[in-house]
Image (cartoon, rainbow, N blue to C red; front, side):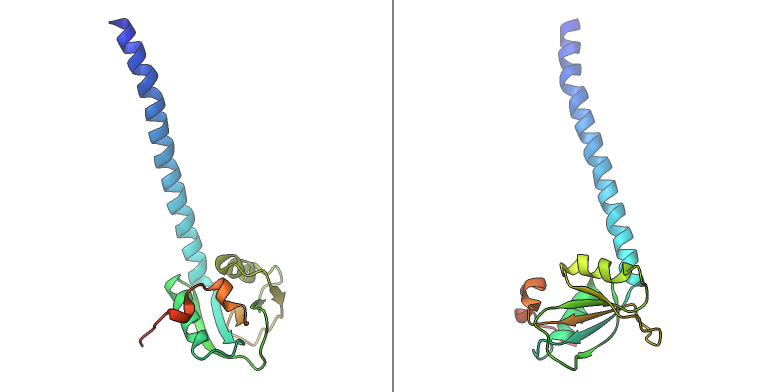
Amino acid sequence: MRLRYIILLIFFVPLLAIFSISIYKGFETRKKAKIREEINRKIRVEVLNAAGVNGLARKVTWLLRKDGFDVVYYGNADEPLPKTVVVERRDSSMFHARHLARWIGCREITLEIDPDRVLDVSLVLGKDYKKLFKGIDSLKIVF
């Protein structure tokens, strides 16, 4: 009889530990996701199309807003660019630009402080936009 309890404990305790750890990790993951979404809501973004593709800035705006970013303006850039760039406009630590760049997978980040703008970051979409926004060409947005 005592052997049954020992065997039961040998199987039950690790099972309970694994279950507890997975529940804890699930809570931590949701907590981190909620914090990231709160950061997204606080970042004011401008999306500029420098790829020369009609409607690209509007589509990316829709995707960023869906992820919680506050896109305050979208339109066309003055000149075409080969690569997408995230431009920090407010903070010399480049917190906003780094966060957005990580979010979309962009490696090009630069700092151009402009206190006259009411935004934190400019996202300038270059001709490499398909690498960052897979399937965006087939995305249909109806306003």
